[in-house]
Length: 186
Image: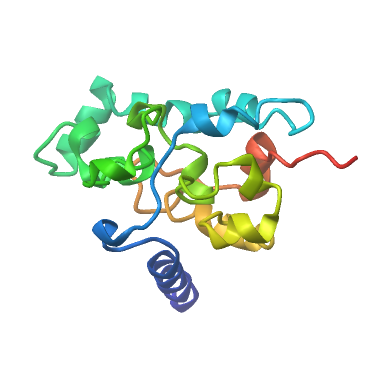
């Protein structure tokens, strides 16, 4: 029990440190998968856009538009439909709570669900090829790069956890194998 408590506290602290709490203070804007996909769809880049588009992350928002999702939202005491509830959107839609329209790129669509920028940071300042060619520059401009699988797993568990009303055991290695998207060496 105590171990579970410390795990939950660790995840909360991690989420606080990684995710902006005041999105009006956010300095980078969301561009969306179409922008990221411009470069990340090729074989040379590991067909990352294809991996994402075939994943459940790409349809996460759409699951909130179902009667089943609305039933769950109602059972949880939410006043709005699932697709309108911040409690649901926080894990099903990138950029859903960005109030400043200047931080939403022309090609960004919240309907694209859990997008590249959910894990890699809002990309307005690092999206250009010039910046992306120098990893340190991309990181300085908002790109989030995870140092190891433990960090990745921790990020995943900010949504894939017991607080989710549809949570089932989260098997990180199995799930990561489905969405891993490294750039091929060579």
